[in-house]
Length: 250
Image (cartoon, rainbow, N blue to C red; front, side, top):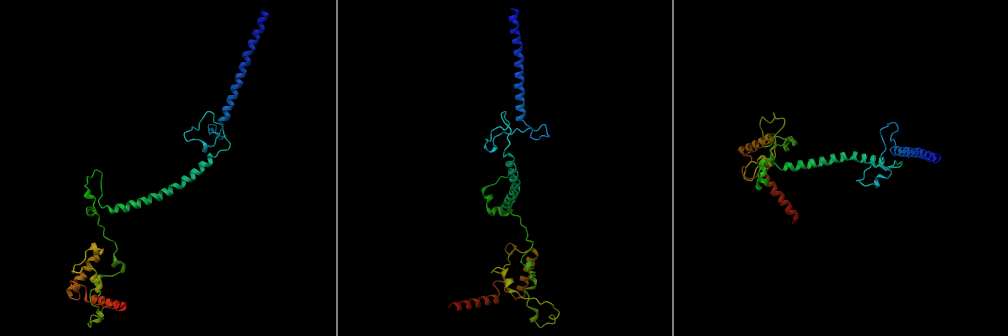
């Protein structure tokens, strides 16, 4: 009986050894597969693994997880090419956004200039407060920096008197630059009823507005310009021009 039990014991003693060896070989193969799956992306860096999937990234869904257990390394992938293209595209976006922001800023600035009243958080307003006549009360009044007289380099005080070259006076030889009489300019800045137009209508600087008003008052005070209607010379020229045009037509 002992002879019959020994081979059975020997067989049982051999089988576990073979099973352990097969288990260890299977485990080593699985470890090799896992190492091959998580191969190094950069060979010099030991902790950088290539965990990207084998399939093309463009065919994957957005919600898929790129880190998967069955992911295998792929040799041909367009992920880096797509990433480079995305970086180039994003590099051109800031300039476009800057241009759009500048355009929006200019449009907002133009619109805000129409709204004279500066609204603040918590202000209570009525519908009539948004009317243009009501908002014009809060419009900031900025005086113009340059007006028509500055552009033409003219002084209104030099254009209301009679030309000194036509007068026989001893002062004529002393004048280097004779002053001219500009009735059209004088009558342009007064109303038909003889009132001097305000800065709101003339859009002149305060200095030139005062000079123009002084020239008009002086010409009226001297008697060379009427105080109510337009100058006779201007009326005569308009009448003559009207007669010439009517003769050409008929």
